[in-house]
Length: 99
Image (cartoon, rainbow, N blue to C red; front, side, top):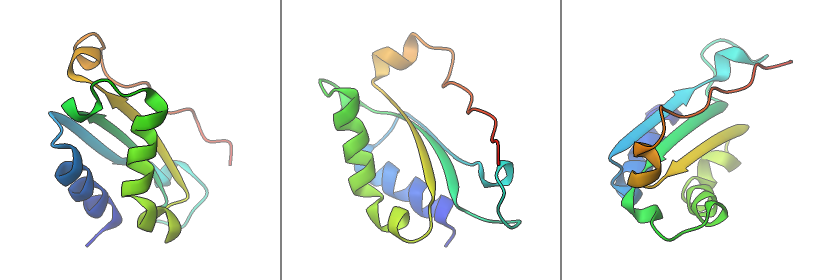
């Protein structure tokens, strides 16, 4: 199973998101083709209600600890409640890689 699929499955099981994006951004970095080392996740879930941003990120980091220890070099997280997401036009674009 790909790392991207594993991340998606874990986030889905843990947070039952109404919106989920798991984007492999490895191709924008200086890594071999088909790498799975850099990811951006956008998670919209009722599980984040009443939680500060740092607490949300800790939950995601704990959930994906094995992937982060086994080769995922970078994980950009955008975690929103339903209300926060409804007031946005999507997650911010990732910055351009410099190397």
